[in-house]
Length: 513
Image (tube, helix red, strand yellow):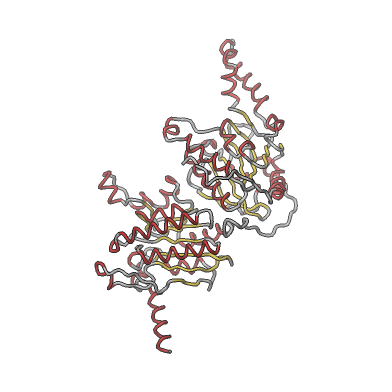
């Protein structure tokens, strides 16, 4: 029996060594942790239970039978993060470059199945050279199996992807199907076709970093939601995000104990400038309203004219969508509509109430927007809000013009409560443009057309550039002082805790993709 114990110990030691000490050292020299080190820092101390440690590939093609390493390039298992059950797989670049094939894929699929059955998040740590060429179509089948599991799990359990090395070719579509993607600056990259192929086909010369690095995907494509300077910061970011998210679609959003006191926030009274054309930072409104230091922004560097993220209000997790007047005046465009829609749908899938801060002058005009389908993309945000059944509250801080007013969680598309500050302007368009259209004849015929225009602009503004007409119609439930916002929101969300929405029977809707 002792010999059998010894054999087991040897097998475990062999599996834990991965591709060997030299390759582990090479990983460290690149500024990267190993697959096991990543799991060690991610999960609670001593909580990790590995599954499939002794799995190996079965291929004998191209000499692979001489290169059998236990684990087959991916570490899989479960543990806890802050005491909550979490499943994880971490690709091991020291083993055959972390390449994916039959056994490797089977281990990942097994973990995803267990996560769905037990209703817990799954975190994938990607660090792979791609498909294992020696196994041919079996590798491609493995990717497709994972894609299918990602799709089945979507909206059932949270799925997070941490890119901590290369992720190229077909491998990128698994993270793309998950809820959030994190990348590490300078050591991770994602692209469908690499720099060499790009150069051959399009004659463009570009580095891996410029083509698909963390900066490119956080600012240009919007593929990644969060970027970090190093892997430890990325791991801590994952832990922070999970603190706002329920374990699965049948649980409520997390909350922490909170005792009510004086909830007035007088700082909010002085944020909106007297000049309606002067910008301000909507993040000041957000941080001034939610619990202290609780705002966790998502997609910070992409489509900055809209701000999305998680926060806590009286200890309870909420999702926030807000127009940003400090960037492009807060207009809605293609990218901001996509960004907002994706976040709204995630919150709705996982029972996270939505809070909207609205200051939107409309949709961005121009041929670039029209030719690239602002109509379809704007409709994505409209659709996402309209189908959301979680508690939904809107606060109109200033401008709410045109169709954008409707899209930003208006009463007309199912918002539960709508508040407006006295500075709110709810109208078809701005007073200056409206006056030019309505009073065109009078302005043209006037001796001093400029003065007449300003007179009519003031007349229109007095009549429509305020929240009171909307309140008279019931489109705004209450006009409140900014300092009252936090208190009103806490009470409103408390009132909406047991909201039940009855939807028409259907297989699923057809969102304008």
